[in-house]
View 1: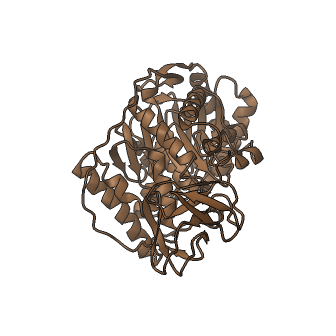
View 2 (view 1 turned 45 degrees about the horizontal axis):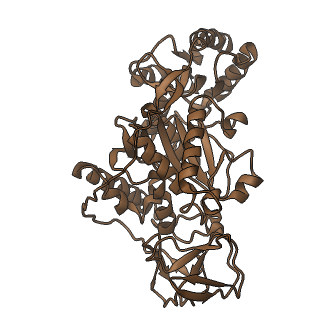
Length: 496
């Protein structure tokens, strides 16, 4: 018989409707029979007790907010009568929890590109990166012309990445732009990069070249358009040189320990914390057990679940960095006069998520149960293996760009509502429910909805791991097939 409801944790005082529940239906939980008092959509919560005003709602074993009015047993629990418990900055105490993961070494490999500096890429693409938005048109035209001239043969893609920044920015805001662009230029998924500058922008091409640091001049080249008589002709000459080098690259066997994945969710629903996010957590733990790397970001969506991450930090130093990660982002909200708990989107709420705590407790499941081994600022590049936390907002494209920029080869993106976008690395969409996978097959790459249907988690993890290895070895995901590729940079300061 198909399951129609689920109590996730024995401590929970709500259950989740796996399928739509009708008024008058009865559900049996912990030996008690509860009558559903109203129609409840799939993914939404049903009260397992009578709640008084102010009483905590518990899901995943943790409070996700409080009742703003009395809620009767069997009723639909949603954002109309549940409010967040979150407030401002908090003091935290380091209470490290031991982590024990019994995951075997599997000696898994994928077919990737070993770069001259020892780094590994899973794609061999040519990118045209503008230093400033003024030359977006030049970069886009150059990408089109090289594609037409070569047919794209010998490389995986030829892409320009226009953006709006690189000038009229100050301080940290300007540095954020420089860091993300530098990280792109050095990313191992690129077999070659042409950096296109204007010449008078704040992000001065010569200073940016120094900021990039050591690089292979046969693979990374710079052009300043104000110094060219014909920027298209000169740009094409440079791209032909880059293409000649990149098109020689071949895939070789690479151990899975070299793979770096970004963990992201967007358009979440009531199934996110039950299916797709736990699936990513299982894979993240498996990857880390093989010596690999995963990165969790969207800091505002850690609010309410942050102590779980803090207490898994390997050291007091990492704990202190995580506290700063959380409180600095809260301060960012408060400094703009915004509450820290006003996060779930209309789509989240329609999908069954009522508060930020509920969203966070589902969101953080993407990183499994491994120790936190690193904490990074926005625009930082990965330096350690294992699980790292990255400072970036929850916005899907900004956060996914930040994950790619820190060095992730691929972004694993769970969604209950669906989204077609992709950033500058493969952006794999994992659906939380089967209906989405069926309705949007050109958006969704893998369906985790079967976890609440007829397939055990262990079998889904095995299929998912095989699929990720195929993608790391060259199989395209949907955003690549559709050529949906773009970047977004975190805007934090004034515009001159």
